[in-house]
Length: 383
Image (cartoon, rainbow, N blue to C red; front, side, top):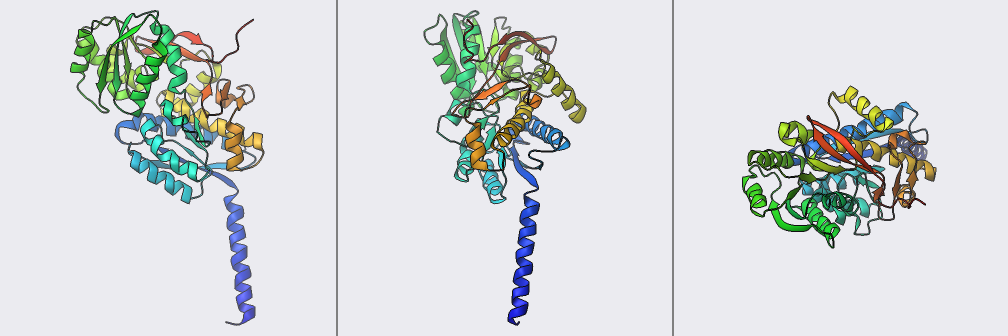
């Protein structure tokens, strides 16, 4: 091959590379790494659907900075090791951002890979430890336990002097136990029983019996959706007629469906509910149902609002710079008036944790009913 032909092929190759690069820049590629099978399937599927609904809306409105979002979805199988491997693959594939996993145990493992690649990562995980490690690339789409537990603790102190806690023995459950103990320290409520259960546990008869034997006047249930439903059924089966209190997972839509009448009367603090008295939330509820033919739980809202927070951060920076977008998320305040898809005004702190208003709900006749709207934890005091 002569020199002229060689130079010609080099020029062709360079043109192809430039064309490929230009094409790649026409989209914002994100990885949806979520639990579609295993114990986290309910949470992960809702989260994925919420992400995809937001992407559909944003793309229909012209995208972000004129570029459409492209999603690639992978199933972690609710396995932290698989989640880590999928995150490594997403990094190798050159995605702009990652959404998921939802389970705290999985994100605790996988986020080391997105951090190493300086790749923004939004998660629905609630364990306090997720954002306590100084990772500048991790952002929540839900409350941290450190924010949520002080809110629910205020309610508990009005209902209980001696509390039994049934919790799941994993990163999520142990983090919640630590935070509710911290939130109740120094109050008139004493925790008289700490009852550990396993992820995926089917039989809750022994756990409920321990709660009854503790002579507690209320029980706080902190577990994943399926286990929460089993706990509620067993509590009713054993005749528990005292307050049943929890956090978001206790009164989720899937729990209500699985527990049936046993869910009625359960009270929980929820950061997100499709039944909130908020026009934008009701619009989301209707759009989600139209696309997926079922009612979203809080995880669907987490995925949906997470994509809109990414949009707000990118537009603040004005360019597709992953590191700059991550920096812009720190201290970012997003107005629902400017970005209706964020649903509620929200602010992010320097750790990637968010703050916004939330709700106390009670399950009545098989549905969540908002009984109180709570202000952001760090809302300025009214003068």
